[in-house]
Image (cartoon, rainbow, N blue to C red; front, side, top):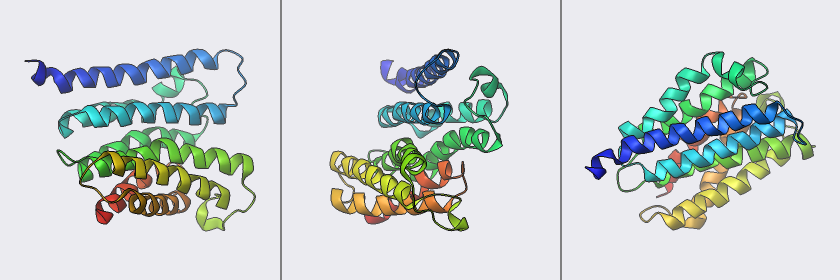
Length: 222
């Protein structure tokens, strides 16, 4: 009985944790705090990504795992979430990124979920969760060398930050998940694939391209 309830309970836990984070964000946004709205959004991105990563490792069924991100696609695609969390999406580009995040998670599950070996999915979501906000923060605060227009204003420094974080995350996944590529190969290959995807993708769209290309690189290198 408990085994049959495992995934449904995880759906409730996943949705509850993300809802809690959004509620905390709503309350914090009403008060004075040292973080700018931009930094605040990236921290929230990483926290929601961390919850998603842990839940991904715990789910048994892909069908149940898709339920929470699919639910948040429906919520984020409407203006209701922006009203619920003021400042979370101040313009159309940021609103696009809001619903592209769970869409990227859903597509990564659909294309790369493999029962018994989930390394590719975990690597893709780890890159989305941690490397993407790291690149945005470093590129905004420290970026001096900008690419041409084809990179949508992104910087060499941001790409380097993405590569380092994605490489470390992918290597850690490879080391923890048997049956995948060697950790060093996974780190370098996934780091490069993710950094290229992030640099070439329009803002917001990278929330889809990054996890897909990192997961594809991980699977290819195995």
